[in-house]
Length: 213
Image 1 (tube, rainbow, N blue to C red):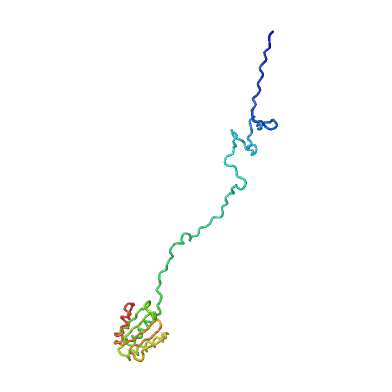
Image 2: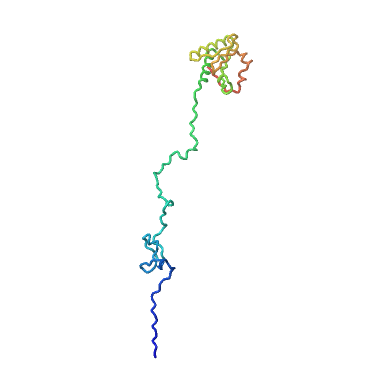
């Protein structure tokens, strides 16, 4: 008796095996193309590339406190013209020679002595060398009487110019008369007294100039 062979059963499409999920359902969702759908592209709405990578380029925008705000540029600051000149050497104005009132008084005293025939009239600049005067005027007389006359004429001429003497000494003897005008001290001396006391040698280091009539 002939036996019938059973036809082999038709195999259906192979199903993807995955880990069991709750309720007996697979843990992935099937897409339209039959494959798994990218979860990230599903949330963002961005089409996915082949291999499941998103199609956008660059880093995703940060959220929360780590997010960097755009840099806001303010108005451009102008650099002051003086910048860089802080250490420049200051410009020094050229020195201007100021008039010396004491020197003018000394010259007036010397000319007044020459009016009465005083001899060897010399003006000494003792600034920085003496504490009581800036200029000394030394002149010689032939006699004690002439020395007194020279001192009187100097005093009279200076009063007319507006200068008053501070003190006077030596009128009694006439050998050596000293007339003090503050910054200028006048010495009217006889020739013998001038050589004996040697004031010219005492102030030899001081600058000097002679006044001639």
